[in-house]
Image (cartoon, rainbow, N blue to C red):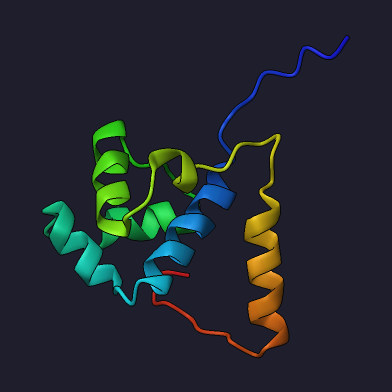
Length: 102
């Protein structure tokens, strides 16, 4: 019997937050300003997978990105195939870009 307790994959969720931001043509500054932050530090931490947004911030991100909170979060047991498929397509097409907080 597998008693595996599901948790959020912080690194993969950070990568998903970054992916969604880029797909919408937003900068880290855009997201920070929308959230009412005075610096970009929190958004950078989320994208690096150093921390997760609070529930309130996750809700705000879902509204900004036009998606659901569940779509932003990546569980440790799902390692979302849509995410890895998208990343592999971007890599194969040579679409590499770097952020200041990567």
